[in-house]
Image (cartoon, rainbow, N blue to C red):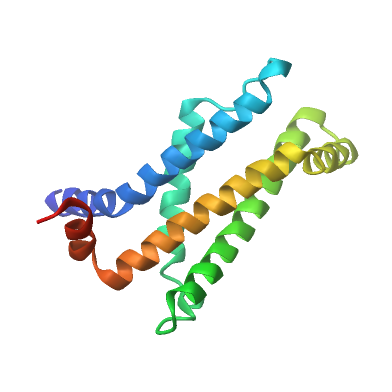
Length: 164
C-alpha cells in the first residue's frame, strides 16, 4: 500500500504544474467564451468541466513527452523543439475539439447528416477559431516555459524568480 501511495504522490507532484497552468488557461478560455456568448444567454462550460479538461490535458502532455518523435530536435536551439511541440499539441487540440463537437452533434441530432451540418456551421464561426487561437498561444507559452526550464534547470529558475 505504501508503494502505491508513493507512486501516486510522485505522479501528482509531476502533473501539478501542468494541471495548474491549464486550469488557469482553460478558465481564461472559458471566460472568453462566456463573454462572447453573453448576449445569447448560453453558458458554455462549468468549472468542473474546465478542471477535468485541465487534468486530462496536463497528463496527456506529460505522457506525449515520453514519445521519441516529440523530442526530435534535442540538442538544437530551443525554438525548434518549442515550435514543433506547439504544432503537435495544437493539431491534437484541434482534432480533439472537432471530435468533441462531432460527438456532441451526433448525440443532439441523432443523424450523421445533421451532425455534419452542425459541425460545419460551428467551425465556420469566428468564435471557434478565436478559441483555437487562444489554445495555440497558451500552448506556445507552456511549451516555451517547459523547454526553458528544462534547459536552465528548476533550481536556477527558482533562484531567478524567487531569489536565494
